[in-house]
Length: 248
Image (tube, rainbow, N blue to C red; front, side):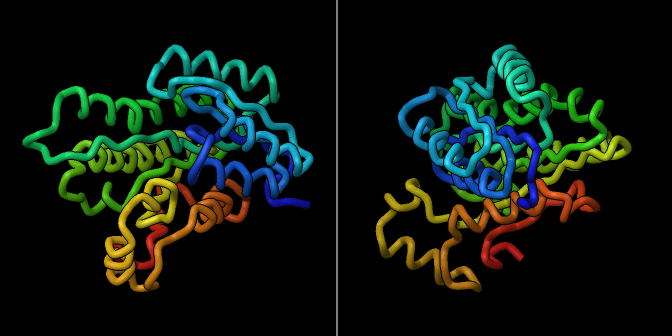
């Protein structure tokens, strides 16, 4: 029997990258999975087919995570389709990197809305269901730059730091009903996005990491599995760094 047998998870921004790896890991452990992304394209459908191959219920939903009304509607639909929500992974995110002196108001607003407001939107939407079930795990995908900052990423760092403050506050509000809220702070993870970086840049990154390698989406997914499952039933309000020791 899987660690998440009979549970239902929502993973936002799960058509590719870390989000799709988390969705697959959850399905492998027996969870029914609803994934959301801006559009349901071939990439999202491909993830759904793989999830279904594990014998679980899976469905993709088109939703703009930064839009409050759309999020309320999509979560309502997911609860109708699946019956309940046990796990929420707030993974939807974008970057618009540039130095502050060149950053436009639009680049700031877009990153804050997609990365941080989406966490408010989805957490608020699932909260009532989890509180009435007196169980649940909310996992927010932050970043090491939300802890240490990074030049050229003031908007992204601010959104990821805000996520940490949100996580700690929500954990204190909902703990009495056995609902937990934690954050994961990935470091340099090898994804399609980082694959575009030149080889020498990736090697330089690896040198700064005590484990001497970039992480994989599966490394992050395994940590998400721990936080989603009852293995972490006494863990809440925490930020777990998955960074190979880069940010100690």
